[in-house]
Image (cartoon, rainbow, N blue to C red; front, side):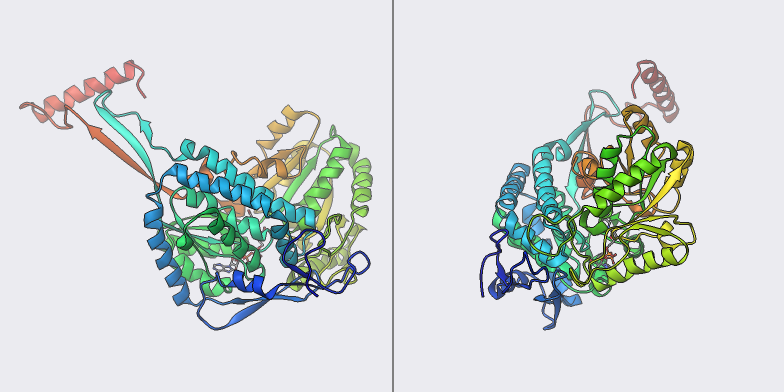
Length: 539
Ligand code: NAD
């Protein structure tokens, strides 16, 4: 039976089921649709890898696998395309981003279907992805000149030395992305790279290739030249090093362990990289917090996308005075979540993406419970809902000997800790090697902002879980310490893809003794000059 997705209108072949009564409904995709998408992978190996849906474990597609030679060819094509692209006007490139913005909003149902099918996430969390990419496209299109225009700088001799700084594209950027936000992560870092005049070779995660390939189709539909964005497929450990070996810059999002390998590869070649890595993010509920707001935010912070979110909260520190009242509200709200594995709107949380994720989450909770932690809610797998479903889980009594105390779970598991004084809470929030995202709930914004400066995280959200910083595109986003290097978003998010070039035009004088002047007289004159410039207040 072939039909449109009843929730949306996308290319889903709707299995013989009633999703309202059969949460284990089987979904599939039109073969022509997947064939058109997978044809965009540059791959000649003749082998393919199967992608299955975590909603029902049904096969979705076979993805052709790339060889090292394919990666080399992808870079060759991208390099040729980049030369012509870098000569197009900034206004033209920005106009294509605005067209992409509209296309993404127009085709959002199809995009969301595919994201859900590949990742299993609830529809409302899948919607965050086109939303974020559209926001990014618009932000960079509208701020292109602000970031990339040639800038005048102060010349050494006032009026006689004209200095300009140009932003030159790096060339071909390698983008290696994870599965947790398959559409956003595949596309969002590449948009500023394109705007700055680069080409891209992308290697999305093998579990979520279709969403990334749909992104490429949208780029082409928006008018970006065909060869400008190449996609290769395969296990990161196989073709990843080949990408690092050929790119002019690497943008990597994924685990800290892989990020370290990427950084080593880039160091060998003396190329730059930005690394968006893991976290063990803390949320602080201060004694003057609005507890309803804090509990609502804590639920989103901990269980959005089943906790498979880099900026997700896995540690909540609550002031003694409000601990019991907060916990009561937090647990009640968590237990009220609608769990489900369907394409319909209305679910608050979907399954994990894979057996591997389920095993990690189960191991973290079982280890904590075996060592004395208490489960306030959740704490078990739900195979009745989907193969890799795990309940939203709140733990209390987690201690440093438990794995989930300091290691990222990357699942729907959060630990609660009581604190007596704020200095202690800040110190405990700063404990460990990560520093990605933090959240502070307090009615006193000024005090919360002062505390934010003491928290070693690249983003801090006050009275919000994570969306306020993540969606504020003008502000940089990224991790301190082992959560990353470099930033996405804002000026830093685009300037990383450029080389700075300083051009100085000198007139009338030269930087050497003139008209028979001795070196000594020249040195004296320059010394007097320096003293004068300082007196005049010159920088
Ligand atoms: P991962 O590091 O295993 O994989 C990420 C990507 O790297 C995939 O495309 C993978 O194929 C590729 N890869 C794997 N080994 C490679 C190698 N040797 N060389 C080159 N590429 C290689 O990460 P994961 O476990 O799939 O993703 C989850 C992690 O990503 C979590 O730690 C999460 O916190 C992090 N993450 C961070 C952000 C952020 O913005 N900071 C966003 C999303 C996810």
